[in-house]
Image: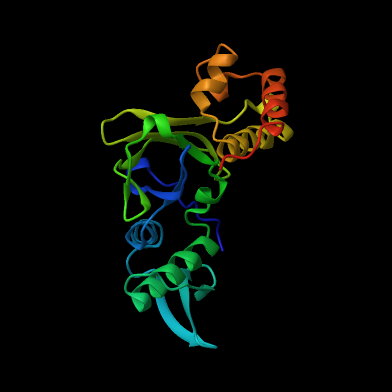
Length: 231
């Protein structure tokens, strides 16, 4: 089968959802809905060039997505299982299994390379309702850059006021490898300690973590690892 190029996601096709909420800030997760996958399948294989069906196996709902192989005149199928959502459980499981099957075809794999997205409390509107923290802000992807091998190399998140609340840029190729994991670890440590990115970069005289050189990152990581975990 001739290699078919599946396009990368666009910024307006990606949703931002809150992962965790603490007194120090929140983490955000990147999502896309099933309609995005349907659109990419239509664009790549044509509306008659793919099909899906669902099967219950062992009490779990599986989705099979098949695409037509013109060269061998046969269907190529990928399958995966879904998990129920809190709302409309059956529909949620069907949608989730479909999206997972699409990932097996190479669609939207870039989301799995996203950095840890941390937004500090000083950039949020956090309220308490029924003893639970509620975030009033809404977030969207301002810009995103994805490499040929489906890795997110740059990402910016903004709130409803069009204020940029998170920026990420992968290290240059000559610094790739261990330093790329170093940047991800920095974001993980910021989330763990509750230290804001703004405080960290100000200390090193730069405007973002992406501008920190290898020496700065190593020193920052060493300092954060000595910092207690936020309550």
